[in-house]
Amino acid sequence: MKAVGLHQYLPIDHEESLVDLNIDLPEPGPRDLLVAVKAIAVNPVDTKVRAPKADAITEATPKILGWDAAGEVISVGTEVTGFKPGDQVFYAGDITRPGCNSEFQLIDERIVGKLPRTQDYAAAAALPLTSLTAWEALFDRLGISPAGSDAGKSILIIGGAGGVGSIAIQLARTLAKLKVIATASRTKSSIWVKQMGASHVVNHRNPVDEELKDIGIPEVDYILCLNNTDQHFPAMANAIKPQGKICTIVENSAPLPVELLKAKSATFVWEFMFTRAMFQTEDMSEQGAILNRIAKLIDNEELVTTVGETIEPIDATNLRLAHRQLETGKTIGKIVLAGWE
Ligand SMILES: NC(=O)c1ccc[n+]([C@@H]2O[C@H](COP(=O)([O-])OP(=O)(O)OC[C@H]3O[C@@H](n4cnc5c(N)ncnc54)[C@H](OP(=O)(O)O)[C@@H]3O)[C@@H](O)[C@H]2O)c1
Image 1: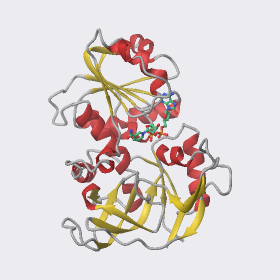
Image 2: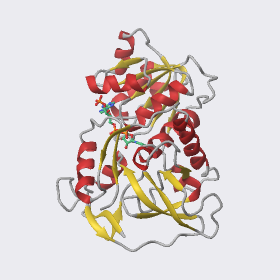
Image 3: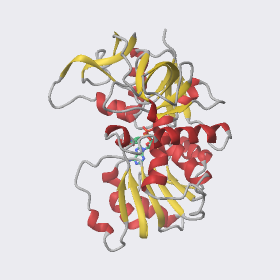
Image 4: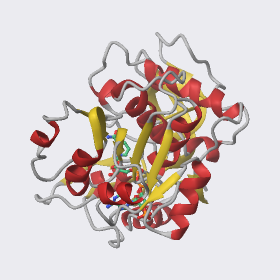
């Protein structure tokens, strides 16, 4: 089968950073679906895994990246109960297994959802990783009610125009009925976050606590940090209400001054979308359930897909283009690749 992968971890401008490959078709384990991948999206996790490493490692078996896909089930493992060949599905996947940048992929049925009825494969592929991250961050980690019991409370979403922010703003506004303040630094990204449902926009190039004071909202109940935790931590500590909650999804590069949160008894929590699959947690199938809820919200037009750009076909040249764009840090919404030549 066709695939795109790497043997060496190289800068994206290097021709060998992502290469076209022909690899063996994998055999499903008991709970696996074998899926014919029709469309994929790219995420910063792809560029982080692909980035050059301190030791010059060479992979004998090529590493296949990609953790956002939509496709059709071809065959199922012996213990699969929820899917059959012919089902159309979408999913993010498991960072410990080969990714979706291949014509066919194995995926555990517990972390798979049925494709939204109203979307094609490309539109659906934009959704899984960012929707799961945003859902888990807002409702599982920050403990916000998806049924609207926290209506009227305020949330600051830092990095609002990116892939995760675009869905998080919609979920916070539509399901939780929160007042959403999003950050964006450019005219284009500011317009986008308003389209997604933010009622206020502040600029993350300035300290966000100062920006909040300037718009007359000096403190917020919740903060969701989707970019540069090191940069934003002190301002988040200033802007969170006493007993408020902060969630970040981005790794820090220096120790975080968590003591700044003590006087306010503020909560600080991580979200990592791969936790459930990586540790095979008892509630791993919750990810399949979240994706099915997302599909329903899309079909009911309560959420909109966040595709910014679609590129065809899926091959190494186009994937290098998509990685290069993501590495600018200026992507709005999602970049999707569709079809194999
Ligand atoms: N823990 C997890 O499970 C998980 C899951 C998904 C993603 N992530 C991580 O979360 C981050 C965001 O992912 P994404 O897919 O949303 O990324 P993305 O789409 O690449 O984000 C791009 C956005 O980031 C904004 N931005 C750039 N610099 C910023 C800064 N210093 N502060 C705040 N915003 C800034 C940009 O806005 P402007 O153009 O307006 O500046 C742009 O719209 C990545 O680091 C990713 O690896 C973690």
